[in-house]
Length: 88
Image 1 (cartoon, helix red, strand yellow):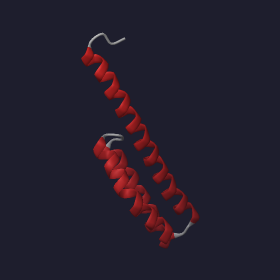
Image 2 (cartoon, one colour):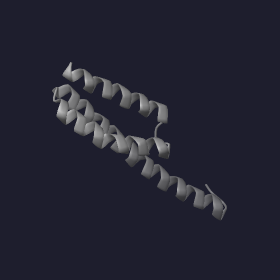
Image 3 (cartoon, one colour):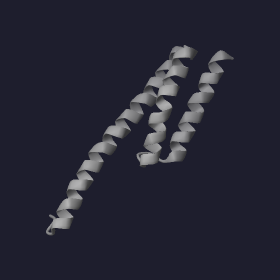
Image 4 (cartoon, rainbow, N blue to C red):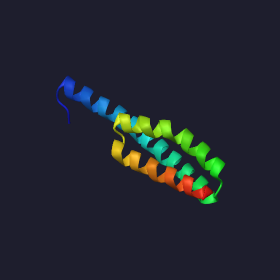
């Protein structure tokens, strides 16, 4: 257990940050799932709307360090490619 005031404060800060990161990670997974669902339905317009809504959230998650920026860039790229393939 933390003995100093600074150590107790660090524990409080870590708990707050963990809670925020869990919420961000959950939101990130939900928007990815919504894009995947739209792609699976075959509706290109809905998929494009979903990916446009997801993009800022995913970029923010990358900037905050919730997930690695390259991981999210790869996911966005693959989802965009699958949306483009819907028309073909």
